[in-house]
Length: 397
Image (cartoon, rainbow, N blue to C red):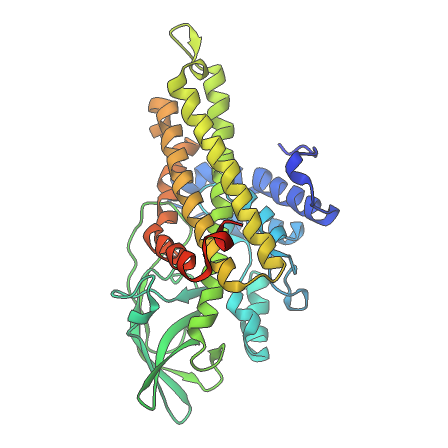
């Protein structure tokens, strides 16, 4: 359990940040981790009463809506403070933390009407949202989006199909990227779509490798009518808003990946120093200890890189540089965390192949981090373009 100790990495953290980290760690260890095996057995779908308890404990701990404004029901955290919480959440499996009331960052620039109708209830845990971007022929490259919107007398009519809409099976409201056809141009725009509207249809809800509480369904929009004010970020502003969303999501993946490695190393090192084979602790064999040493080095390096990105954003550094560095953090940590899980499964041996073993669960769960919010290959393209446009020194400092 959590002990309030001072670590070298605590330098520069004020009392508020240290207290926030303490609350997040206690929540993870006392609320989330004890539910992991039950969640696994139930394919991620915990009973309603348990889900409500998870929400209430998060509200009590002040862990809801972290980056949103206090006047809207959020906590008003800095990116550094958010990193500290996401790192702790990453130490748990089965995405039980998805039940913590929150909302996508785009709601911060929504109209007052949408803040009242959607954001505030989201942060109270009364409703859920989903972000619909990916399509059959458009993943990390939004230029291939085929979902369209056209003007009507009352607002807009949306047609198209979105894939991998995370939480789309449980969401009440969707933020949908579509190209508004206007004067011969295609203007990428974010629309607010009440899921109860006519024409919103779930056409597939496939299973995936992990056992998470929410699905990633395919949703079709058939002549869905929305109002003139059901736009976030202005007409044609979708791409710029989405860049901020991607940078934040990638930073979050990196932060949680570091937490995952922390938990993996904790449990695997403990196993390796107590398990004996051939008259010696398995930790004394280089085939066991060296892979753990490599993963510890990866985790420490990834943590410093991700912390740097969070601090740069808090310091209002060049957003394009922050975007490049968020890609670096996501690339490095997502690749390293999955290697760490694979190594830990091997060290646990047959026990590591059981679903009640944390390494087995992380091995399945961490694999998607190299894919969603931009594959590792896309991150490399972003970084390479950053090297060309902003220079080696800028990205290395």
